[in-house]
Amino acid sequence: MARDKSVVAVLMFDQAPLFEMSVPISVFGVDRSVTGAPRFTVLPVAGEPGALTSTGGVMMHAPHGLEDVATAGIVIVPAWRGATEQAPEPALRTLREAHADGALIVGLGKGAFVLAAAGLLDGRRAAIHWFHAPTLAASYPDVLVDPGVLYEDDGDVITSAGTAAGIDACLHVVRRLWGPAAAGAIARRMITPPQRSGRQAQYIDQPVPDRSEADELTQAMAYAVEHLDEVLDIEDMASHVHMSRRTFDRRFRSEVGISPLQWLLHQRVLRAQQLLEHTDLPVDTIARQVGLASAVSLRPPFHRFAGVAPQEYRNTFRPRARASEPTRADR
Image 1 (tube, one colour):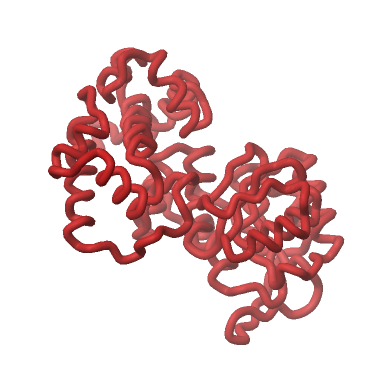
Image 2: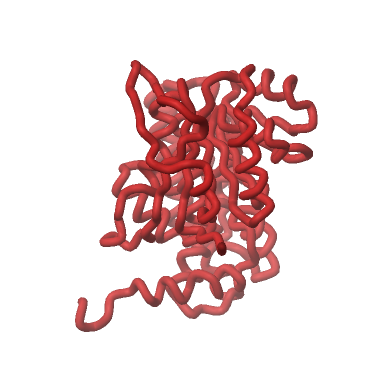
């Protein structure tokens, strides 16, 4: 039976935390099609037999069994109960079969331990909450554990840190498969940022920055977004708020979690994505409108952030954008 990417199986286990297990159901399980989001079929799957008890003694009933995973194009393990406990073999076998059959496999937080036990993370980079990273690395030495990022996309397997980073990873899946407009429609209804880069740090040195510093960075970022069509660099951003380049770079990394150059390139790519979706401008023209010299300059950062070349991105998402645009009668 062919697997459908709009069918999302969520494997649920006893004693797994309630919030983490609710994340993919919150992202994929609510019909937000009226806002332009895709429709999904979510299958809550019991990953093991017996009653499932979650945080605070909440009892859950997952109406689907492991056999129902056979139709899912996306299989998510949103949580696991213990970093040192082995997941049941039937669930591991189901994950291996789904992966071999072309499903996208996603592990959120400690769900990475289940993916690792299934052998799906061997030789791959994997994200996980920094607290559990040493245990994952020690238990599965063939996994390249990265405790510093929000999520890691390795093509057919995606992993993320726990709690809120799971939302980021799920929105990334929507963005990758259905485009930024679809992810944005879901994020707006969830009142959550529509795009946080997976390379963004899990935590920062100053969780509560000085208000004046935060305001200055906000001003610099707003200035950059307003002038993306210009040849703007980090010196310009720093000068706009009367900081030295060194001080600006240090404060930006501390507050945002990535370098100002990474952030600026990401903003240029986001603007390019919007133009590719909603205009027929040549890629060279779009590159200049986001502050880059040519399509040749745009391709490397675009591919790094979006995973495909600009023209391939347009071919995938421009027809969808046209289909979702209101007709004259709707306006």
